[in-house]
Image (tube, rainbow, N blue to C red):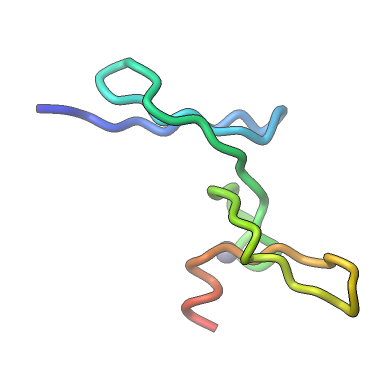
Length: 65
Ligand SMILES: [Zn+2]
């Protein structure tokens, strides 16, 4: 059975997705300003104040708010 493992490096703010010990994906993570978790980054999560990016909200918090 295949096993996915996600390894997050908070120093570089990147995450690696491993499948059976092999890196299958690498992506940027961001800290959600709502739940404070490090989660996969997507630019749709930016909350703007005028033209300035002030917060980043993860997809889970965006769906529940
Ligand atoms: Zn969140």
